[in-house]
Length: 184
Image 1 (tube, rainbow, N blue to C red):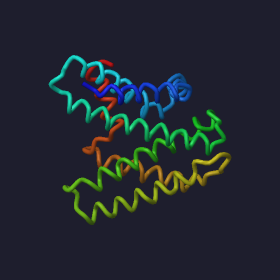
Image 2: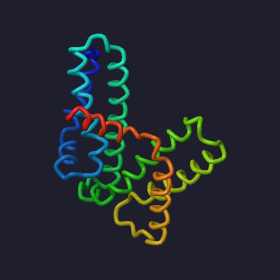
Image 3: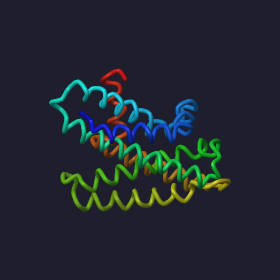
Image 4: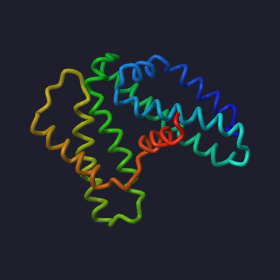
């Protein structure tokens, strides 16, 4: 069973951030992919763990991991929103860049911990990720005119890196797959 205080903390956190969560859902923001599937999965997992006592420890670990992932994503979105003068329309405008940052930060962690990847390739790709991250993080600002040539270059690098590592599963994808598998 999921520890009741942890589930209560989760529920309270969702209530505290209800406005932003609802906005992401109703506006069909691409950033909602990092929020709603996690919320649905964790809620389902908590209910499921009440009936399956033999999976207590595994369910608890997955719940904690998912809750931490949700917390990190939502707090990062809130930081970007503050940086964008709490302008939800500007958040929408910058959501692709934020998604890229989320994806690349996670991809970087997955590459780094994967022992099957050659160390030279790993370092080369991590350096490229850092370069792309720097570009997109620097451009998540209001009213900034972006050089289209540079944007194309970094978008290509981003998509190339994702294509190269299709075998690595990112957490957002894992939670979406979990929801699909259980129909939640």
